Image (cartoon, rainbow, N blue to C red; front, side, top):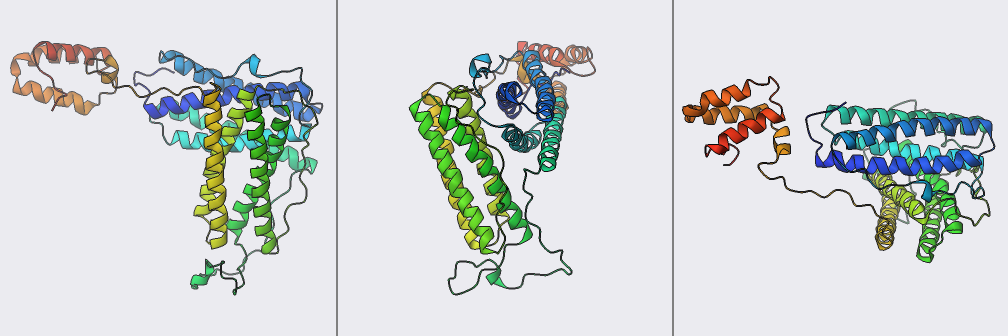
Length: 393
């Protein structure tokens, strides 16, 4: 589907990111499909690969239709299909499940920043596809008995209202902390689950990274994930809620990298950004002071980690630049593609002041019922040729 309405800055920037995300995910899936030995896991990975290939092509077509260059992303040079397995079959599915959560959240955000109908429709499709991937991978892991469920709490028999300000106070050493509520337990558990999966990823990346600064960065990511796991586990234990004991997914001892350092750094940076967002949401919905302090500390550390990751990407020339904003000149046809009917009426209002040109301009307007770009440009040229500048105040 093509449109006479140009992409806005937010739509262009988000599509640019989405294309790179799809490109990265496809390279990872190619390696996973090559290395998995489990038929059901391979079937899931192949279906996800087919869906993501289709979605990457859709985004590429939009760039072509807009006359934009295709972003530099990831290709066959960023994946080594001959490298030994770095993860077992279970972890491969866990990784895809985690990435589907990350991307479905991002695409929902991007849809809310989109105005053109075809772009909104695209993000609805991308979100639906990622939600389906999440559902399929979660079902698979639960049936295998390798995915822990969040803690179960007693069903409420009545509605309680908070009327004690001590509900939020958990820093007083002389008062007993209240137990975590159901929302807080869910947020703590999700942070715990994501960081366990992320820690295993960092262990694998650390083993195979070629550049020393990249290797050290992954070591730092591993330790950061361990710190979060420790804090979140203790929060559950303090409320007499056992931390999950079943964590499956294995990192092998391979030191031969299946991915380029560039791809692994981009992947880690993407997960860091997701961590910032999810922990911010966790802090916003938490009422216990100690939980807020823990979330705040995690956010600060994750921000520093993500910022330093960006520095490494730039240092090695791996950060593909996002298109910068450029001011359109008044005579640029693209400016008039976004003209609203209000602007057209404003032109006609000017013409009533200068009736000598009224018939000429109305003739131009009548060439099209939609007032498309060519008509608007013709109208603009007719006016400016006679010294009228309707869009200037």
